[in-house]
Amino acid sequence: MSIQKVSSKWKKMMVLLKDKYIAPFHPETRKYSLTALEQMCQIYRTVYIKPEQGTHGKGIMRIERTSEATDNTDEPSSEDVTKAPYKLHYVKKKELYCSIADLHKAILKRTLGKSYLVQRGIPLLKYQQRPFDLRVMVQRNLSGNWEATGIIGKVAAKGKIITNINGGGRIVSFEQLMMPYLTKAQTANLKKELFVLGVRTAKCMEKTYPRIKEIGLDIALDGQVKPWILEVNTSPGLYVFGYLPDKSIYRKIKKYAIAYGRLKPAPKSKSTK
Image (cartoon, rainbow, N blue to C red; front, side, top):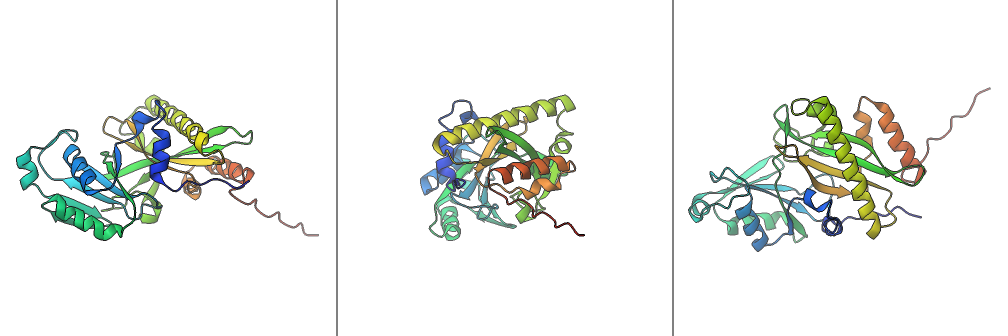
């Protein structure tokens, strides 16, 4: 039986929002439109525009409202909105726009008629002055049960808004990333919490998509070290875990992936006489 893959970020989010435990971990997300853009930019200081279907961070844009509001949940005054420009950031380019209408036109030129989402921006924690997020890997184990098998940190390349390795990001261990923010005990507790969240997410997804075998959760941590689910991948990259110092994690991930058919087993070497 083939492994089920779900490409629509919107469909996956709609499934997960039905779970009362998982829903609070989701930043507000809407289907992209001029109205959605305007309302989200009024509510939040930073928002992300991302393709509904896409991988490796391609097509993602960030918008920053440059008013002086300090709380990203506060609505700006009408005076602030009138005079404050909007900064559109994609790849390594930054552009300023003085109205939502002009900003919308610029975004449409890049979306090319494809379906996009607008999502609340989470202010990411930083490592060596660069933002990072996390990837939690969850797989069916040899008994067919869901198991969280690994966690890594993805640090953005200089000037980039995405953390993906394909976009120049780099892998750093979860424990190293947490050293400036948490004690060892707190880090261990957070890891357990993220693993529980990962398994709960897989079980929730399974109810609608029974043939999934693995998921990768992209997790943001805000200034209070609160986790936020940015995205759930049903065909996550495995090789990134090979960058971890502990190679046993990668070996387990590959072992499970071979068992449920994602990877082919390595060919046996022929013995020589």
